[in-house]
Length: 291
Image (cartoon, rainbow, N blue to C red; front, side, top):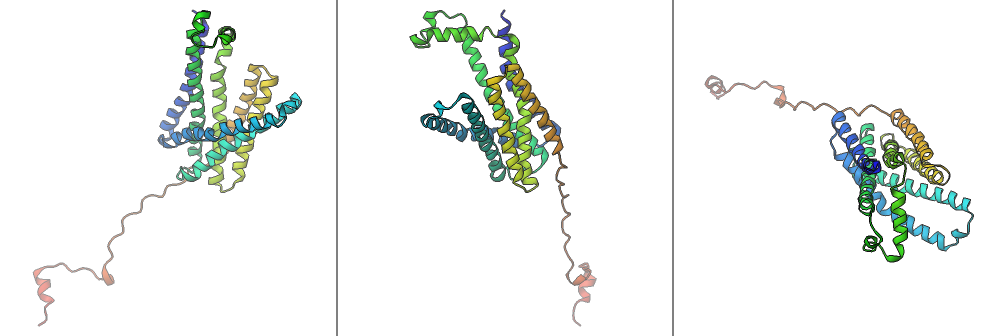
């Protein structure tokens, strides 16, 4: 059996299993429930509703405006800065708005960690699902004849499809696991940025939101530039450095959980005028009559 059949499947399954496992661990350890994790999960999806169309519209406008005539280096640097800032603005902006409008009760370091784990988990699970979907397609097309390919792709694209299938199944096995490795490194980054945004509320200072946006922008810009100049393994090494920095940020910003006031005892009924109530016995009632 081709080992890639196993490693590709493991890659996709790990991309889904790792964030789910982290969510279960946090839920059991801190007993905060799943609500804030699911809110973080939804936040990533909401951020992409605006982020993806915005990038597509601006990129089309820039290409029509003459960006294609820029030097390759100028295009790369601008793309890195633009894609990094747009990701930072949309994702961290979505985090801020959700915490401000939806999750108003989430105001602690632990809530920030769980919120970020949901956000990063959403991204990992969606990408893992797409990876497994592509894996199933490539598994079906692995030994397909040109006649069989003609049933699923246009005739003029059969050669391209064959080349893509051949390239997919000729990768070194260790490279087929890089998707899971990248998610392992990016989830801590998402948690760190969520904790930074949470600090905008717990410390009542918008500078933390700006810090989250800039950190996100620098991270994504580095990835864009790295894709151009670095091998896949070296690029993952760069992301690993950001993951390490993110872990340091997470624990550096750790703060005590807000104290929960114990429930107050019920108020005892006050005695009117400070007088001691008299038992209602026949003798006491008789004494109250006017003679």
